[in-house]
Image (cartoon, rainbow over all chains, first blue to last red; front, side, top):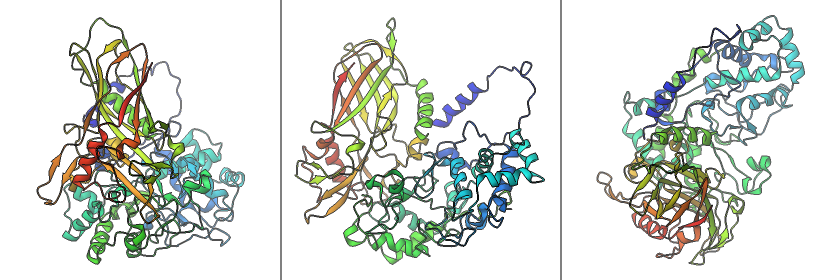
Length: 355
Length: 256
């Protein structure tokens, strides 16, 4: 039942297609670009999702990268995607809440961007309100507390630009720019943001050694009677370190922000937010959907003794009446050491991801 | 999308599956297994979740918030002993209404089968740690410190505890393990074969498989959620009791 064997068979079948190059008319085709999937991902989890109508290309990714770092998408040309999603912070920022071009702050912490192609349910944002990366990329441009632009204006600016029409021609075979093509290009770039080379990844691949403290911390993480983090945050067999599902993790007894419930309208979803990946925590503080915790210590303390009960708290939150499972100070320190071993310095320094 | 990928992968796997003995000369047909759920006869679906409304045998009032479970190796047996074993698995996810119908990836001969069975969970040959990409992607794994492999079932919700407060429970079934000595784990098998009895397979047959969720709490061990609600994975005795209670959970429903 080794899946890799069957994938190989599938590839062999697919490779037997008939060559009909003599009959097809000549047509411009941008250069296909395969995603560089880490070895551990290939071994453990399903392949990345690439929409059938937005395949990865060299030209599309290059365009998406340029757009991602360009302030042209904002109404006053002061903000780019990278303003709140900086490479050095694993594509989030250091603020609890990010301010838009008008200096207005939102109420959610900027989400890091990596391994988005492996979000199999394709629900994006803390509350899952967008289905698909392309759809997600539509929103910040027109959000009044973010880029506060209109797509009509943004597209017009791009169309008038000295370089962009040609870049769209190269990426999509048309110089006629649209919001659809802009978001497709940005999504292509975002799908290349794959993080899979942390110290712990190397440990699993046999090329690095963990300290005893990090190993102890992993055990705390995996122990259902202690951290029990693995039910929501992946494991050595799920290197995404998230389930990409929505949970109420006991932050509040009363909700100021309904999260998923605001989107679905189902009271049972109130207070639920997407589990973030635990990769790259060294770069992504502050933590939680509202950035309420400045440090990892605060996060661990929350799960250990700070849980707040509410009607929708996840059953996986244990000993809520006691505030949590009360792991020891040593276990906390060990857990923190392990969590930091999931940080991928190569990812944040990857020149392909820099402006 | 995760379901689609899983279906593709599983389909590819099962195209090469082990058919122990084919039955020549008979017309083959596709067969669908439909997983139905009830609480002592009252239908249960995801629309009934998240509300405390069920009473178990111990009179604990409870809700269901999550239910997913794994079945594998569906087997059709003729009265003459011929068997068709369909290697593969299906992760039934009631919470998200996914995989409630399992279309068997190979066709089988039309006819009367003296017994149709499946494995609840994985047997030890199939319960290979980290071997299944779709299950890994669904965070269905069991920690290595408990022997690795995969969950068999995750049933979660809230109950009213003996101080009249809502409390979470996690009724997770895995292979029972005594981890008192982490260097010498002691296992006891808790997967089991569910025998559905005789099934007559017609053209494009549809077979309903019923799970009475209440049975998990009923017998032979009357389940007191105040005693067993959390951290049951490393609880050897709890796992064995869940195995015992699981024996009467499934039954055959309508066959069309």
